[in-house]
Image (cartoon, rainbow, N blue to C red; front, side, top):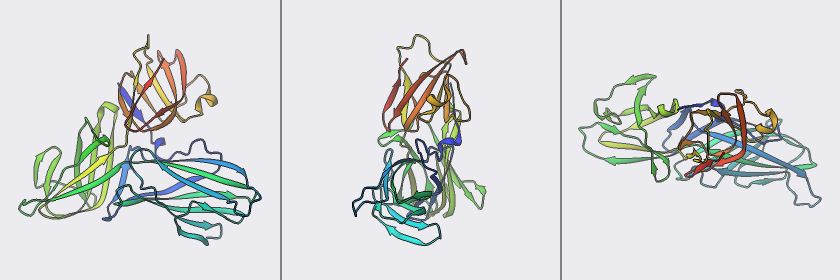
Length: 328
């Protein structure tokens, strides 16, 4: 089985009819640690609905709704709206409905994490208010949930680090997570190794890199906790919840496809009975399952005998903590 994910999953606005874009995505914990991801499932999807503004005096021009997949956000928000001239028209506002003058706006968003131990921030660029229509924008977020446990222990002045990974809340991962520490871009060897996943090191501030071994999936999911301060005689346990879903092929298939390709919803109607590598989010070779995957909605293309025949399955949804069955 070969499982390939492209970087298209990182920031992808699907089903959006506006020219919106998302930039400057930033994940920070309250201890100053910032999170970076390689081959991850972090994304902000945006969906825009536009309709005519009513004649009522209280009618708003812009509505924002923030949602997440799995355990990520607290439900609160802080929004700063900037007009085309660079002037701030709303500053760090917790409201989600706004009356705005005609023009183009950018929005700075800050969303506290579910454990109140940090925030996610980014910019929404290119919101056009014409005075005749309102913009109703839903933003759907996915990323890992992370919570760092600390425990005091006598270790002759050394610090210990040992990550713990869950597929979703309450379900431990069945693959390994290998931690490494770097200082100024250089690998720092541990002073003592308990096993492949638990090490001791001199106290300092490091970049902690955690590689989640998904070799069965054809890649490694890597996160980096930058500026991670470790004190002596302290055990650090970064608890990582991938907020993953999963899928498997139904046993009702008389013949299993050679490949299945995953695309954004709406792709099937655009490209017809063929595959398109440029639009593909990821694909699985010789699928059976179950395989973990990022949640969300997809058009799925079943590929029989490597291109001899294709079959679309439209609007298939994967949910955190649930296994979707792909039927023939």
